[in-house]
Length: 140
Length: 283
Image 1 (spheres, each protein chain N blue to C red):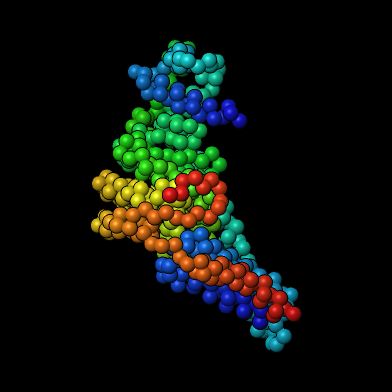
Image 2: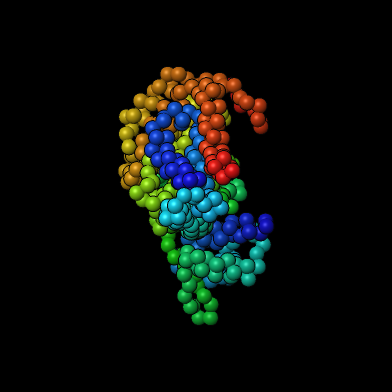
């Protein structure tokens, strides 16, 4: 339960260590750099192989140990998340999968948007009567 | 007879979205409007599904050839709709959930963890969205965090939290399944875009309650300006022009209670139609 949450945090911490390092790191080296966490060697090993299954790390033989590398830079992974998170999906599916505050498709005429904004500013915030449901503490 | 009526009824309900997208007043009572959309769709599906079983139970009293013809048409309608909906629901659901899971993984790894479900992406683009479903995530970029003033940020978060809390994704998924299960020549993309817009308006209502319309409208404007500056490829028809539409809706008054009441009566009438037809004609 709580473990699965911290597992996500741990994956992220390990990727941070890998991204900060020059060249690859062994499990032992990753463990040493994860300061402030009381972790078992096997835990780090498990997480590293999970990350490899997910395709975000690669590994190569170095003597008797495995050396882990990030499969991509943080920037390119971020770009991947931003640009084409759902590139396999049709536009209909995409709309339902992730809800954007403002989807790219919905901005075609900035003048119209600014004009609408001016109308809102002109009217100003209006106090609203709230139906008595839930925490009603922010009404004007 | 009953089967013919049900099929006619379904045809009418399938044409209804073309009229419904033209009634812009509906956007002013988003919750009731969504119920109308759902009630009409459900009713159409119910009419189609019950056509064949009812034709079997109450055969046509006249000629046998007509009887058989009606039975065949009703059978094709009922079985076809059932199969298409089940298959399509399965495929759409699986695609959406897989994509969400992959995306969650990605933002968990590149994003800064802010609490249990908020992730801050180290990106210079202004963007904010949520990944709904089990293990939902609220994703916002570093650039949006720095660029947006506190009250606009609060507006964005309130909007996304409303999506997650009220499970708007389920509504969208329902319509996506219906939309893609409908034969191409029968469906209209404008209907799906309208429902998507109404869902956004619904989340805007929640955010407006928290932060007021000016902060929310400014947040929409900020994101719109940033999006066009970033030169992101504008998408096809999905929700086109909804930034201006959403801000305009913030300036309009809430509809009179009678309008909302009428919408709920329409819902009730739509849902009552298939069972009423079945009972009246069958007896």
